Image (cartoon, rainbow, N blue to C red; front, side, top):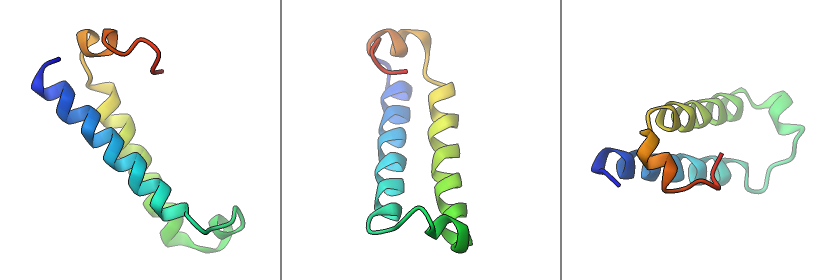
Length: 67
């Protein structure tokens, strides 16, 4: 795996973990009242999506079980 793919996968994992930290101890109803939570989760998911879209086909081939 090339260095760029590795960096992107690490970025995906970090953003995923951050999003999980944001929701720990929260309820679904918090999304209706906490704009900061919604913004933070949205941004974390944007980072995941952007990084995932730039992983090379070779990098994706190394992890065929990941969507």
